[in-house]
Image (cartoon, rainbow, N blue to C red):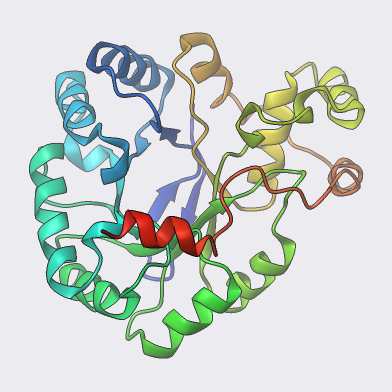
Length: 280
């Protein structure tokens, strides 16, 4: 299976489908999940300091036997480690836990208290080769504008909640304008909606003899979005990457555009109480 890639503005290619490991903290579960993913063709893995599983992921990838240069590894700096000095420290901790000497993509997890200092540290780490690409998570347009005003190197990716009920069209347009690639977390709405039984999705699933999840994930790919669906089920892990033997038509995409409800199911990026509490 050939996985499509997305090119960042520095020329780095990102596998368009990766595996998210949010909430998978049991070492055995994570090891089995990673092995299923490797066998299914995944080479892109997304974690974060806050997930508490960097060490387990690093060990599982080491046990897989896949050479490091064939893997694309993402992690994120947490709110309590933002700022110039702390970000550099945070990266060293992540490198040690993951058992690697570089990260393919390092992200600011939330717009915290010292984004300027955090970004300056990330730019220096990028220039030093410890990070192959840098970006952000959960940034809205105003957040991006603030960062672009102080950045020497603009972010390469913004990872945000995105699914057909919340397509982020306005944010996408701004990101396209600045060549910031779109990465979706919660690409299936995290099971918090009726998305997979929506009649439009079910009709397309029947048309292509695919599952509803595959229709939604293919919708993301048609839009050029990078996706990191999460599952610990071997069958679903394979299903979520088996997206490259069909495509959606313009008519299909138009039909799916019609189900947008502008409903966010995850945390609001400007949840200042959350930022304050997690920055301590």
